[in-house]
Length: 497
Image 1 (cartoon, rainbow, N blue to C red):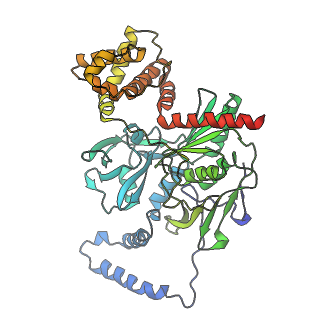
Image 2 (cartoon, helix red, strand yellow; image 1 turned 90 degrees about the vertical axis):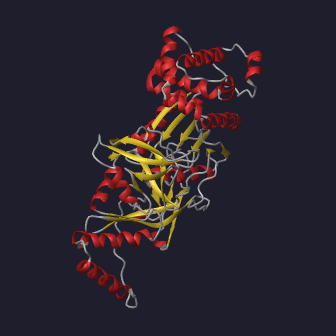
Image 3 (cartoon, rainbow, N blue to C red; image 1 turned 45 degrees about the vertical axis):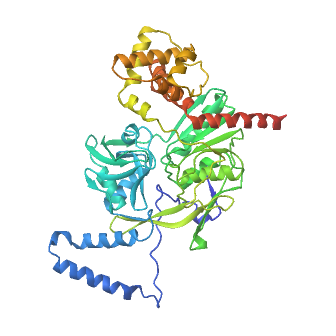
């Protein structure tokens, strides 16, 4: 689907991680003092090269690289110098296949911070979360570490291991997590049909062919009879601006602005408008959280500004700046902040993010459930339970509220529902394994325990896809989006009468 930027000369330019845009070098005016200011820099480089004790550390290449890095470090967390190898790595990343751990990172208040893990990668499987602080890599502190150097330290030959020290709010102390590097194959679009003919599309990144894949997923859900739609960009760190704009064109009316940029030079500012071809006009919800950044915020902001979707979740990351990739003669590149994004209503996202229409906090597993999960208790119980109860149907249930009662009261009031009998069996199983689960704990974490068990039953009945579908249905933010869509669906039906 072609895009229609208002400046035709810039139509081929894409901003963001995946774009390579070459700008001419800045011309120096006669009164420009840049040449004069370069003199002490050259003097310092010559003195260092001639006198520093370790000659191999002060080659011309290393000094020049260090000088460029120093300039970029003084700008903002998103402006970086990429040496030739880093520039090559960046290009492979935008093409959808690269080696590493599968996390998008940034500097936040001088601390190496996870923007988001990529679905299905070593980092995601190890439980790395958006907002985690990475304090050490293989025992070495990340304090003062250049962002690209941190990326290189975490990347390596597939199959090799790296240990990162992670701190998260709620941790008593940093935790060391050992990960095995892998070739990261990014599946940017995943889709499913949820109950009630609700189409679900998960966008993990705006990379590769994600715009084409999104269209294919949307067409498939339409053909399957979807009446409403949930778009999930939680923990999506962004990517290519043109991909976000192309996806937004499936919702925004023809000729309407999707996103614009504001820079120091008006002639370089851009405004992407919608084709409005093959539009989806049904009720829509979009899920965001603190790991939704850049292109995710552009899509969310456009749909929110035009009232085309209900935004559900928590405030997004707030990365509303444009990074332009500018090639250098040595094969390296500058990733330079050159503009800021504006939503159709002129909102700047940078540092602010998108505020959801319906706030719903991210699900954070309780310590009880995390410990049981880490020990494999849910998995082992589900396997044993299905041997004793073949054909057990975990699906028909109503979501239960936690019961704030004491253990003694529970003994008197203990219900005999199917779910509670299941929890009784789970408690007995744990006791046989010398793990005590009090009745108070069951009352407090009742629904959370049932959700984890149901996901294990789903895994055994229908494989990984069924487990993920069940996890979606148990997700409180998805549940909130589905509730909002029921209201939207009713209003939409009235409009068509």
